[in-house]
Image (cartoon, rainbow, N blue to C red; front, side):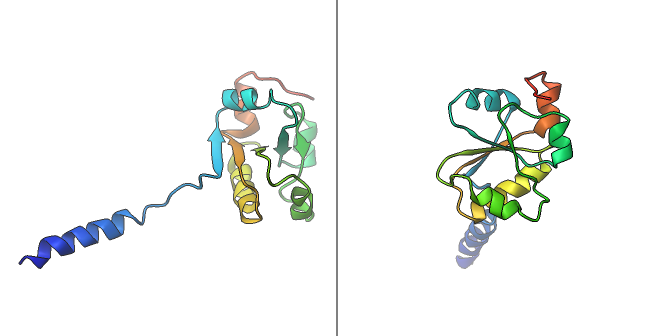
Length: 129
C-alpha cells in the first residue's frame, strides 16, 4: 500500500514532463512589437512569401526569400546565423515552418510575425508596394 502513492507520484511526474515546450529560439511577436524591432539598424527582415506576393506589397526593408524556392536553403544560409532574423509570410504558417528549419541549420534567434503580412496590413502599419 505504501508503494501506491509513490507510483502515482512517479506517473504524474512522467506524464506532466512530456508536455511540448516551445523553442526559446523562436519568438512570435505582434505587429507592434515587430515594428519596434525594425527601427534598429541592420535588421535581417525576411519575407518568405512568393515573389508575386512580395510584389503586391511588403514590409519596407524586407528581403524576399521564397520558402517554396528550390534555392531556399542556399539563400537562407547566406544570412548571418548569429544575428536575429525577423520573418513573416502571409498568415504566419510558412514563416513558422521556416523558423523551425532555420533553427535546425544553426540560426540562434528568430522572431516570427504573428498573423503575418495580413495582420500587419490589417493593423494599418507601413507597406511598400
